[in-house]
Image 1 (cartoon, rainbow, N blue to C red):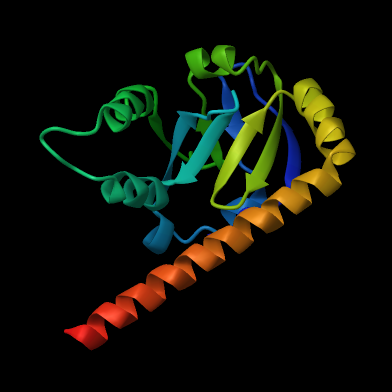
Image 2 (cartoon, helix red, strand yellow):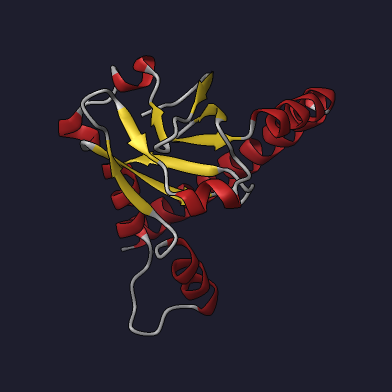
Length: 169
């Protein structure tokens, strides 16, 4: 599922956030699940994934009795700090108070659609970051194009190598 857009909302006294109807209407509980997972993002925001997306990503992580130290650190940080939340009948989710404090979010929030997830951010901080990103738009687009070009070449090289191995078999 692709998330896009920017939505301004408020968090009520019971720490509930109404998910935008545009987002709710696109979620198919059969495909994406009926709940969401919230986790601290690397940028200080609260990241939100549809239930199945988060579970699929978690399942795709390499599993081992002796995991890599970096992966172990990541898992020990991410999963204990993640929360599964369900939509209530009014289309709201309850946000954990600790997560809101850590993200410096109070009663107003900006919900950003960022490809495969949503992000909750403090509106004032997001406005400042957005201005900075707009000022660096050309640089950001150029770096993204270079990263995509590199990834495409790497994938193409890997595919050619796989095809060559198959022919030799």
